[in-house]
Structure formats: C-alpha cells, structure tokens
Length: 191
Image (cartoon, rainbow, N blue to C red):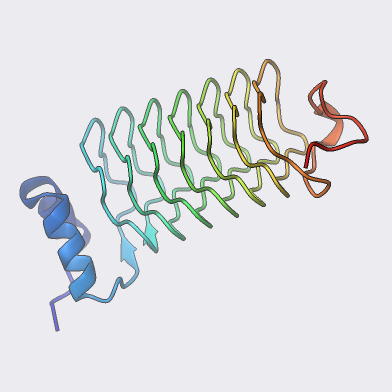
C-alpha cells in the first residue's frame, strides 16, 4: 500500500510532479479522504485533477484552471474561486458554502445536488451546467448567466437573482424560486 502523505507533501506532489502524478497517487490510495484545507492554489493549472472527497475548505483558487476537474463530494466551504475556470468540472454533491465565486466559469459543469448556500457568484457563468437539485439559497447571483442550464429541482429561495440570465434554461415544478422569481416564471413551467 502507498504511504499516505501529509498536506505539505501533497501540495509538493501537485506543484512539482503535476496533476497526473497526484491522480495516480489518488488511485493508489483508493481515493481516501484528503485534507488540503487552507492551501493557496492561485493561478495554478489543475485541469483534470481529482479532488473527489477532499477537504478543500478555506483554499484559494483565484484565477486557477480546474477545467474537467473531479470534485465529487469535495468540501470547498469558505474558499475563494474568483475567476476560476471550472469548465466541464464535476462538482456533484460538492459543498461550496460561503464561497467567493465572482466571475467563476462553471459552463458545462455538473453541479447536481451541490450546495452553494450563502456564496457570492456575481457575474459567474453557469451556461449549460447541470444544477439539478442544487441548493442556491441565499446565494448572490447578480448578473450570473444560466443560459441553457438544467435547473430541475434547484432551490433559489432568498437568492439575489438581479439581472441574472435564464435564456433557454430548463426547470420544473420542483424548482424553488422564492419571492425573487425571474419575470418569465409564472404558475406554468417550461418542463
């Protein structure tokens, strides 16, 4: 069995040997729970990295590249992801509570059952993302773009949706808009 590395050694593995070496380490350790909390990944290219089941709370990912990254069940609470590229990333059931997601790119990302409660996602892009049953309660989504997104069962109660774009999005009767429902939402659905 491969020796488990501490947080500092894991950071060194990622930054010196790269994403492939880290992903191989994850395979060899059966994707055990990792604690990488509080690490600064600012502007790092982490495309394709497998952070599934990892504690990434309090991390800084500003301007980083996480396209096609796997973050299933990852805890990103209180992290900063300003202008982070998460294009086509898998964030199913991830915790993004109280995060700064300003101008983050979630286009094409899988966010089913993700929790974004209390986060700020001003001008974030969720184009063509799957937000099925995602919890966006009390999330600031001003000027966010949900064009083509799947919003079935998503919860937007008490979210700030001012100037958010919902062109061509899909939602159903389980989608909860709260009092700030967009003008196109009425008693009918487009499902």
